[in-house]
Image 1 (cartoon, rainbow, N blue to C red):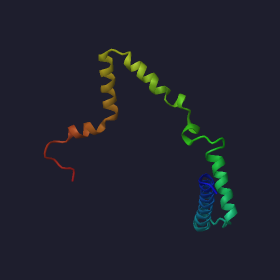
Image 2 (cartoon, rainbow, N blue to C red):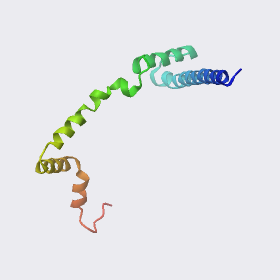
Image 3 (cartoon, rainbow, N blue to C red):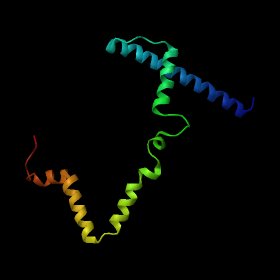
Image 4 (cartoon, rainbow, N blue to C red):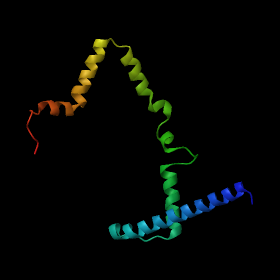
Length: 124
């Protein structure tokens, strides 16, 4: 067997081992938690494998998309940043400073707390 064939065989063996470990781990966790917490049934290895497949279908979908692209496309997820940048860069410097100050007042409460403390006082 050549090196590529051996590599493929190792990858397939590793994938089967990983699937088996995930199935056994799912079965063990289910049988440890669900009957005790919810008075639910215990499950077999194949039922655990079915749960893994079902969770893949429900939470990730098919088509081999990554989770990041599945949740929101790149076009729509950063559209607000582009719009904000365009609006912010077209403002006069005074308008930009006013917005920065309003954002500081609303979001930077740690600066307020820091300025309210008197020198030498402790928070013990």
